[in-house]
Length: 468
Image (cartoon, rainbow, N blue to C red; front, side, top):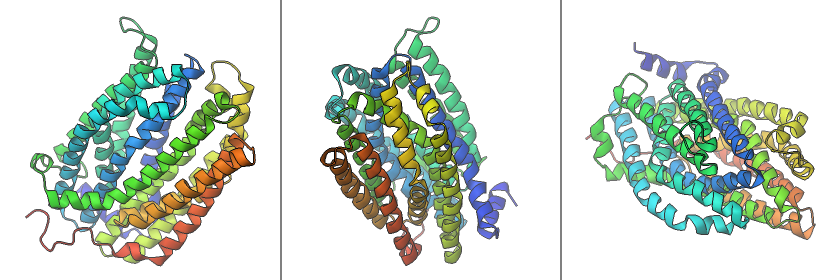
């Protein structure tokens, strides 16, 4: 029995579902924490250039998160397809599905590069930041848009590995990629040796170069056939429009879910820019959000494990096990997120102060309130993330999107405006709106999960197999 088959048998037959969740999740947790750590280092590096530099990177990343919807659309469809066909033990169909995700990523990049470069400054200007921040953020985003192909392919390659139940290989690739990111950033931000000092643009360029490396390693491993998946070149370059259309149909609601989250965050950023202490609230939001990623990313990692287990078990016609796996993942993910949130409550002030080039009591006060209030809703956040990912892994994506649309864009934004301005709570009102809407979304996700409709989604309704 090959290593690939042993992994499949373990994930489908092991009785300890918590062990299954941890088996898949721990490399993704480390991978996620590593990614957030690199983001922290980036902000710390540019923080030495001043508060405007921090705000510029934060503004740029708000735009990046909007672009992430393409990644979500392709990766969600990819994970659902790959995990389902791994569960059925259909290697050829796994290759076809993975290959089409490569093709879709390249096609999306062809559209996104000129569109992003054309609308870049207008989108950033909507945030209402100062001219200096706008100038720095614009240069940051120009580099990003030119690197969009590697941004997409890096994430999609990771989704293929994870959908097949291999979470260790992308961890190793990410370690190499992120260490190179730190080295590239250090040289390009500060101008070491013969390299010119590029400041904020250097941070973007260093990240882009590391993604080129990560993409080469990831897709090289996928094509080699020595890991969980063997992707054939013919499946990467020959379009299969019916499959691509089905993949997008599955992933598009999840993409809209991502759009809703990112647009909501974008609007919250704009709201904060109009509060009384905007010059402190924006850096506090950037720093607080970055710190909160340490709690959020492990939950997302367990959510990825939940999606894989859901797809594989449904592919093997083990519907009850798919549901039980989702519940087990919620318990594991909530535990991770509560642990990190607790640490941030205890060490809020020194953690926020770490990012500042000089002590700023207003940024620390507002950022501390953010961490305190958000920590209260972290178990509910974990529940929403993981149950949604369990359903998405089965290809059930439309109704999780509606939950996000209502709880984030409608409830969260309305509450933020009301609490921040009508009740004059300013930034604290925004933090409260985030926490309250998170609890509401969790209750809605639990209800939808218990209905069970997600277990009966047909991914490929055509009777003929994909490989024909």
